[in-house]
Image (tube, rainbow, N blue to C red; front, side, top):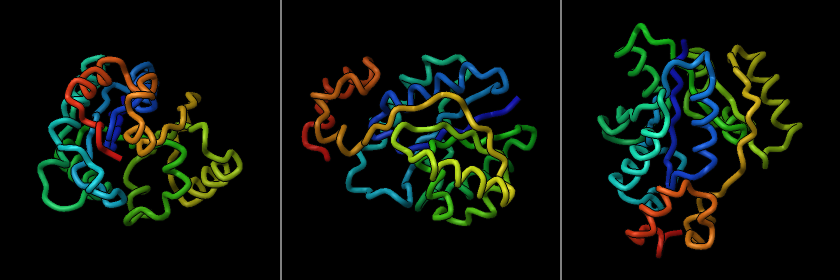
Length: 198
């Protein structure tokens, strides 16, 4: 049984993330899902991040919806930026009997070679990859072949995940409520979290 690591900024948690969790939860090869919010993602601009507790609360709410899902706060134990390879090594060291797999969307795969120490990272564990609607099919297929030939173990999922821009969602939050799970939308709207965010 695999333990799927599903990390992200979740700013906000939207239905694209939700559909990935559904796909993972329904997969008989996956015994556990670690929903892992980023602390300081290296590729994101921190000024657009809402406070940590709000992001964590969204993740707590959603994780309770899925039997296999649990919240993993390992990135909040460390100072500084969150590099995936450091987190994976720490998880493997801490839980040596777990067989981990890292979850990513097709949009992340196409620039995977820009990740910190990506060649070493892809040697550490398999990757569960979901297609996204806005990812160019030819580019996606090329990356699948390229990284597979370089030794990356890819588990390609049939589920196609809708492409949602978190920036657009934050900027126009009240008019895009259909893109957010209902309980998450209510939680954020009541607090006015994205009233002035971009």
